Amino acid sequence: MMKAKQILCLWLCLMCGLAADAARTESFPRVTDEPHPDFFPLSEAAIYTDAGDYEVVHLTAKMLADDVERVTTRRPIEQQLKSPRSIPAGIAVVAGTLGKSKLIDWLVRKQQINTEAIKGKWESSIIMTTEHPT
Image (cartoon, rainbow, N blue to C red; front, top):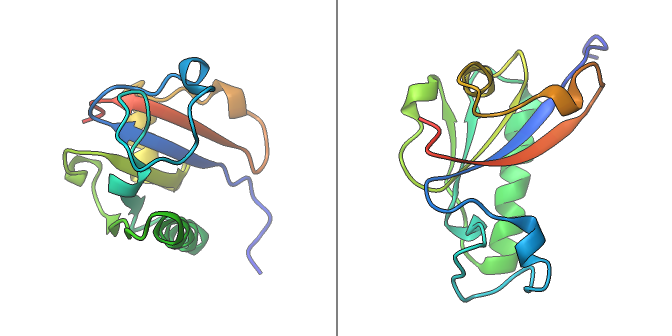
């Protein structure tokens, strides 16, 4: 069994279009077949993890892809990357562990994500949308 250590999983929704504004979309349906400029098109996103991250992160990415496929009948691409610069342009979800994922750590260094909300916490996560992360 893996030693007990602080594992911080970050779910980042990276979008190269408009950032979703939760306050404005509360009255809209959660799942729709119709495109909407304030929605994050999860069924069109690719899911990326760092090849060197914990196995549980890759498993979680696969489970997310399974869920998206069940709801939309479209399966997102799942891919393990070795470099942050290899994230292709387009709609993406990046999943990873702070301090273990080069992708996540690179986004923190670029100040694309703020980890203050989970600092000093165990097994915490954040979900953020950012535009043009690369």
